[in-house]
Every structure is written in C-alpha cells, then in structure tokens.
Length: 163
Image (cartoon, rainbow, N blue to C red; front, side, top):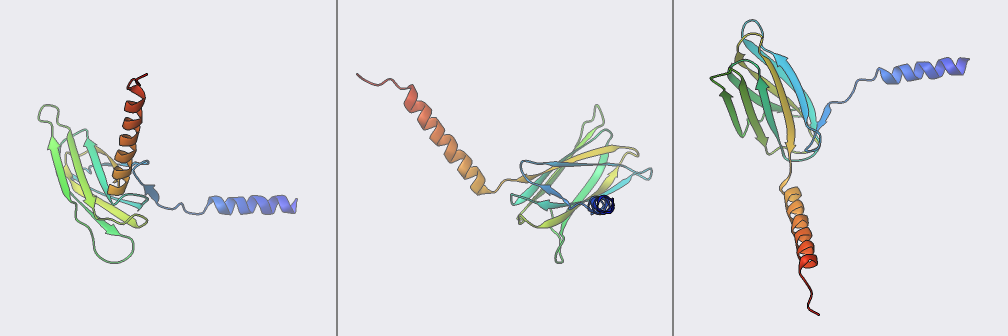
C-alpha cells in the first residue's frame, strides 16, 4: 500500500512539472489567438523554441478591421531584439476583415525566442495567428536535388530502349 501511495505521489509531481515552450519548425506550425480590447488595442507574447530553419513566417487573420500592428522578437538569452524582415497589413474594404503577415530572418535554430505582436483595431476583433519556421537553404537544395534525381529516373524508365 505504501508503494502504491508513493507511486501515485510521484506521478502527481511529474504531472505538475511546467511544460517547456512549444517548438516551432517547418513541420509543426503553431497558432495563437487574441482579442482586441474594448479600448481598441492588443498585445500578445508567444514564447517558443526554434526547432529548425533560420527564420519564422507569420500569417494572421482578423474577423474585424485592424488599423495597425507592430511586431518584434526577443531572444530568451542575452539582450537585444530582432526587427521583422518585412510586414504587411491588408484590409478587405467590402467585408472588413484584415490579414497581417510578417517574417523574421537570421535566427538561430535551437534558441528560445519570444514573439511580441501589438496593434490597434476594432474593439472585439478576434485575431488568429499562425507561425512556422522558414526552412534553411540547405534543406531546399536537398529537396530540389532529390526531385531532380527522381525526374531523371522517371525519364530513363519511360524512354523506349532500342532492340
């Protein structure tokens, strides 16, 4: 009985351990949601581990109009922050929804970062944002080389051989 109680107690302790930040890589994009306050502003902070790639790409949508947004990235170790390589905010004039996009480049995989996203918009607007890692150039090169080899094999098999 004592062993059973000790086992249950240790299992309870293991379940209460705080989870590590989510890993973001090109195969596992992550999403986070927020709502614009009654005063018309929003601020989101999202911590993550960059599992692969050398940057992140973000895409957000809002059911109501957003008037402005800004984003920056801070590393978990050391001072400083990263500014985005580019940002974009578009609003559909007919339906009133907005789309925001951003990209950060020059990051180091295996490091922890916190993404900060803030802005203004229609009170009560719901914003859903997806971020994913940008693959490293070496990954694209390997992919294209493999695709070329597969095309060469398929072409060789499809050409008739002279008897």
